[in-house]
Structure formats: C-alpha cells, structure tokens
Amino acid sequence: MTDQRHWTLVIHGGSGIIDRSTLSAEADAAARVALGRALDAGAAILAGGGTAIDAVQAAIEMLEDDPAFNAGHGAALTFEGGVELDAAIMEGTGRRAGAVAGVTTARHPVALARAVMEHSPHVLLAGAGAERFASEQGIERIDNDWFVIPARRRQLESMKADDDWFDVDMKYGTVGAVACDMAGHVAAATSTGGVTGKRWGRIGDSPLIGAGTYADDRSVAVSATGSGEFFIRESVGHEIGARVRMLGESLQQAADTVIASVKALGGTGGVIATGPGGEAVWSFATPGMYRGSATSAGERIVAIYGDEA
Image (cartoon, rainbow, N blue to C red):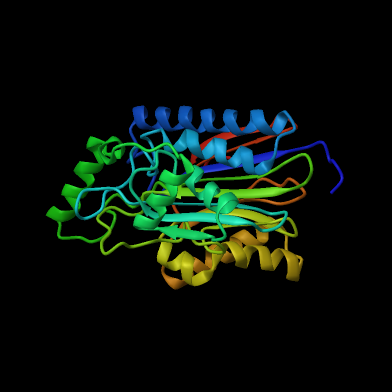
C-alpha cells in the first residue's frame, strides 16, 4: 500500500462502572498519566515510520506494567488468589495472529503472544504449554507474586464475602491498543487478567481472534473490553470488520451497532478501533472507559468518563 504519511494510535484501559463518584482523584490522575505514557510509547514508533504492530505492542507493555489496570502487574485475581493472564496480537497485512491464555509468569503477555505469532505454527497457546514456549523463546518471566497488588486482594475478599462470583467493581480493566501506520497497515493487541474470582481456567474474549482482538487491512483493527462471554458470542471484532467491509458502514456506525448487539444480549463493555484510513473510534455501553488516542495531525485525547470527548 502506498505510503500515506499519516498514522493513528488508539488505546484503552478497560470499561465499566467508572464515574466521578466511584473513582478517586488519585486514581483518576494515575490512570491518565499511565494512558499518556502508553500513547507516548506507541506514537514514538509510528511517528518514526515504524509499524503498527510494533506500536501496539509497545503501548500494551506500558499498560501491563502499570497497576492502574487489569493486565500484568495489577491483574485481577482468580478464585484461588493467583493470576492467569491472557493476551493477543494481530496484524492486518496477512492477518497473522498470536495469543496466549492462562499464563502465570510472562511479565509481558503481549510479547509472548507475538512470539507465538512469529515463532510458532500456531495461533493460541495456553497454560503449561505456553509457559514452556515462553522459556524456549527467552521471554522475560517473573514470579507470580509480582503481579499481585493489595487492591486486587481486597476485591477478591469482597467478592467472596458477598458470595458473588462476578467482578464486584464492574470495572473491566483489560488493556488494548489499535494502530494504523504510515503504510496504511493496521494492528491490534489486547491483554488482561480476566475477571476477579474467575475459576476453572476461565478464558474471556481478549485472546480470542475475531472476538476481543482483530485486525484486517481490508477493514479494521479492534480491541475490546467488557463482559467477555458476550463479546465471544457476538464475535465482536470480526463482526465490526465484516460490517465495514461488506455493508460499507463507517467504522463508528459498525462499532456502535455491534456494541448495541452485545448490550441486547445482556453484556456490557466497549471497543476501540481504527482502519486503513486512520480513523480513531471508540464505542462503549458503560458509564466510562479508560481511553486515549494520538494522530500524526497532532490530535491527542486522554479520557475516562462518558461525558468526555
């Protein structure tokens, strides 16, 4: 594709019941700083003529290291009190993809997902096999306790005290990034700790290509956050791309329509998206979504609440 000399990066840090009454000023400020750092990391790559897939990985790694979000350091805890991390990455040129589920030692699950894409014949690896692959690939690994923060312990304890099997705070802190580079190629990546108190090796939509993560140069790059079971049933990422490619809908129209479908099923959450034309889009059916965007035109947004830009 001809060099178009413009680029776009869109990121999210999760959606849910996030409003000014539930989020402290300190948490608000910390989240905005973290989103800004992730934008800086990805934008620097795109501004230098780098690829969309490098940009989304760089942005995600920044968010995985930040305890403000439910991915990597600060991930939600399983019922047993540990972490099981999921991630996916996909590029739109050849629709190559890699994903991991239920990993416990990879500091950056998105880096492991990319290794699956580039150094294995597979798309999705899980559990012990993914851990062995991480070791073989020299992926940075870290003790499981590093991921655990006190706030997540309190969330788990609260859930158990209420005999509730659902995320008590209704904050889907999954992180995601989508980008369009100067060559018009798109990529998407998503990383998550899942939901608080998850059991039996539960896997949500984030590592499932076509559901929580999807990229196709013919249409769109999408990263989702929300009640994963519903996003899986709706095949959210692929559905948005199909509406753009086959019905000719705008990216915003397609995203809004699919999120409405998720809501009609009983789910909630949101998506970020871009396309080969460099659009910057988000759509969510929750009070808030941690989000941000940056473009080659100098436009930059960092927002949390539904009434922000």
